[in-house]
Image (cartoon, rainbow, N blue to C red; front, top):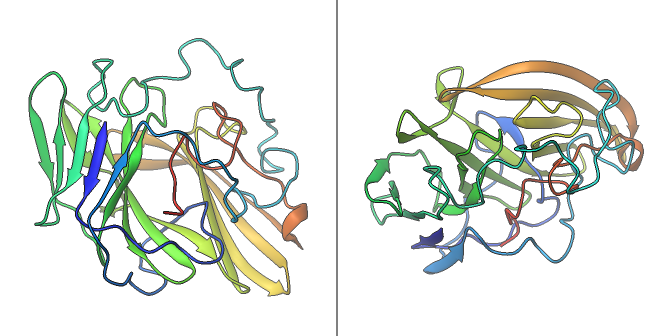
Length: 263
């Protein structure tokens, strides 16, 4: 799926390679940006993102309460991979998704047909990519909606009943916050190894002293075009690099497939 956005956001500073659910903009809007083009089927980033994964540091591979471990990539159950990246409608071919000058999301499907979906953005928006987060055979579309100095915000769209729809949490468009500072950190992964039935895992929390954080961790599944929480726990306070880490069970890495949050 070729992804073209009329404006590219400035690279996020500080901790950026991860996401956590939030419902308000954190950080400043991006400055003016030029026309850019990205490809959903692009290769994964060649360097590890600077931000810690869900659960933070280099611990067990899953939050302590999850009881899971990170599987070896390629050894997940048959069918667990779902759709190829970029395949939104599930026909086995990559689809084309763009942000239009009017600010709407336009999906053109390889087999014919299209969807136009409104989205709320605090600044310029760009399509991050499309990854099947729950293995249902349809890739979810992730769109960055704002970029600040230390945080970025993104949202997600899902193919439901033949059409692309914005995913909501408590009635509002889901807003995903990536990044952190000396006082707060937020992170995200899809297809979490610790809770395989979950589509997304998030972690966020404050710092009580330098490099010491307490994190609230939540796991979610999709219910049509809504997110439903299926598990929650907390870890800490502890040093950031000692907190357990959650990873994408398909790639074995933090984040979600080949999504690149640092452009």
